[in-house]
Image 1 (cartoon, rainbow, N blue to C red):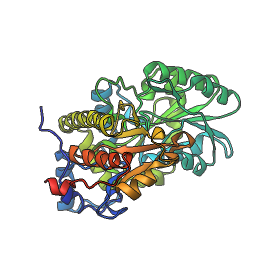
Image 2: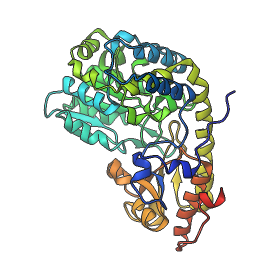
Image 3: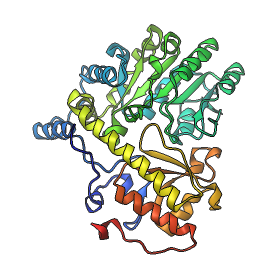
Image 4: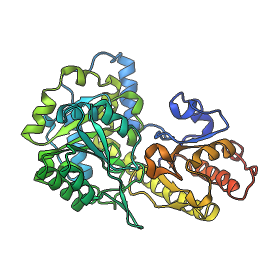
Length: 397
């Protein structure tokens, strides 16, 4: 078993120049954007250092090992070995989604999204020329689920595509294999396309039963596309590399006919880092990261129960993002505003994920236990009506 993956010290993190560490003043604990606070996996560091040393900073090659590396990774991690011939790279998952939708819907056609959902989904559909059709997740009281009956009704009424989040952001839901197969069959019956954003897939906990959409049977392979990346699990978003994946003759042709410029948008450092991330040598690091995130998601639940008992939190099956319902605290439809202003903790605004996000916040627990503890303590002080002083992580170090 490899050594634990632990967050870097706060003083070191504050030297970073990425969005997470530059959006707010230094006194704010930033738990909003989906960046993590860990050092890179050693294989990635070695690969990037080697590239810098030899000046490997030119154009992305027309032939790279990326697709083969991802196929082997998916087989090891998910029991699914997609054909590298059905893959093309691009800059990021959002760009891949737009490029696929542009070629599978006509301008003005409706695309189903399942709020609360990753806020850019609404904009990506519009960028591709589509119109958003909202079909919210169902909350059973124990889990969030796709509302298959409502999706089928929307497709029967003319919607042409489903933009799926698998695993789901912000709820951390891993859709069951049964649900994915049913979705694929519904889409096939209505001649619709499913585009599956699987950026959080490597972060599904081992017992969550994660299944890639294209592994969900013949119907899924015929109607579906996946867009995948190492960026969330390995914290590589700024390096710009993702893969669009197709699994049937028809869908492969759609990817093959995209202009070469779509592929040339891939970042050279992003590709080098992704190949290293998908290598077998990085598996132990990823396993250790998953153990750290498992501990953090449980710690967060315990802290909320103790210090914010009015909060409703369902432990996510995947990722490092917590979807927390603060409605009962009476902090208004966008509680993250008060939390930022009075507690100096930056969380993602719930309403950005759709109307279903009113009263909610999204919290990034891909950090240290000390920062999670301090953030919840600051929020807990608001509950009792004071802005009590708490030791900062720097003071505790």
